Image (cartoon, rainbow, N blue to C red; front, side, top):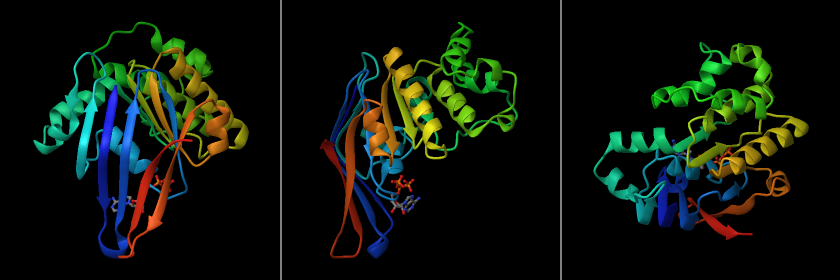
Length: 238
Ligand SMILES: Nc1ncnc2c1ncn2[C@@H]1O[C@H](COP(=O)(O)OP(=O)(O)OP(=O)(O)O)[C@@H](O)[C@H]1O
C-alpha cells in the first residue's frame, strides 16, 4: 500500500542539521507498526512524511496505493500539487495527535464525525459504533474540555478512524496518559485498527508497550556526524 525507498529529509544546517534516512519502508494493508526511539530522533518527522504534510528532500521511491491506483508522492511534491495531496490526506489518512487536537467548539459527536463530514459521508452509524467500542458512548454530548485526558485520546482515536482511512498514523498517542490509561488506549486503538483492517503506524518512546500491544517494532537510531549534525536512520523490524 505504501512504498518508500531511500527517502531523506533534512532539517536545520551545520551543527544544527538533522537528517532522517529511511532506507526502506513497505506498508501492506492491515499491517501494524510501531516506530520507537528517544525524544528528538525523528518519529514525528517520519509520521509527517507519511501524512503527506512534509516533503522529502530526496526519494528513490515514495508511492502510495490506498486502492487500485498507485500515486507517485514525490511527483506530487515536485509539482506542488497541493490539492491532490490534500485529497489523499482527507480520504485515506487518519491522524491521532499526542494531545488529541480536538476542536473545543464541537461536542464529542461533532469531533468524531468531522472527518466524515469533510468527505460528505452520510451518517451510517459508524460514529456510534466507534464511540461504543472506545467506551465513550456516554460522552457524545460533551465538549472536549469536559473530558478526562484518556477520554479525549479515545475520542481522537475514534475521529481518526470514523471515515474508514487506509492508513492510521498516531504520534505518541499515549504519552500524556498514566500507565494504565496508556495501555488501555493503545489496546483499543490497535484492536479497532485491526477490526477495520486499517494499516497503522504508531510513534512511541514506549517500546515495551508497543510490543505488548502486538505491534511490529522498528527503531530509529541516531549518530553524530563529523560536521556536528545528526543523522537518524529507520532500522528494519527488530
Ligand atoms: N521545524 C523544524 N525545523 C528544524 N528542525 C526541526 C523542526 N522540527 C523538528 N526539528 C528537528 O528534527 C529532529 C527530529 O524531531 P522530531 O520532532 O521528528 O523528533 P521526535 O522523535 O518526534 O521527538 P519527540 O519524541 O520529542 O516528539 C529534532 O532534532 C528536531 O530538533
